[in-house]
Length: 89
Image 1: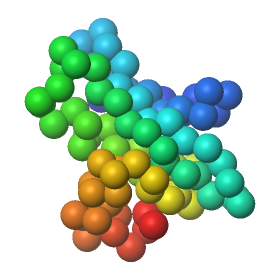
Image 2: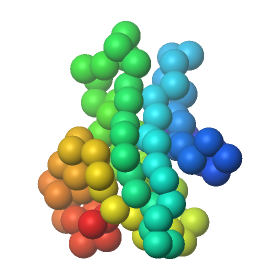
Image 3: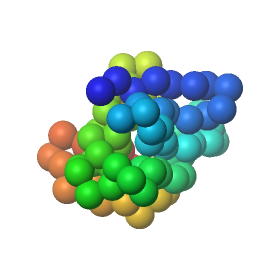
Image 4: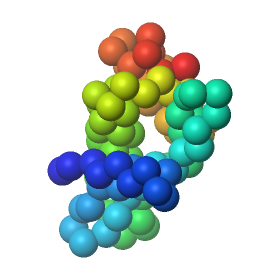
């Protein structure tokens, strides 16, 4: 599963079984504010959300962005990971 960064829409997208799971963000003060994550109803309960968020973290750091987690779920994924806890604020 690959995450695609659509800078125009300010969104990261991962396709799973023909459905798009997304993370929406805004840019403020040079940082990416991760505001909302969504997994379509019919593919929930499979750990897709966590995979999406972690792959989003990987993609944005590869691209040189700093990020702030605004969404509660995204904050939780960052907080519960030794790797991302120090990087995603």
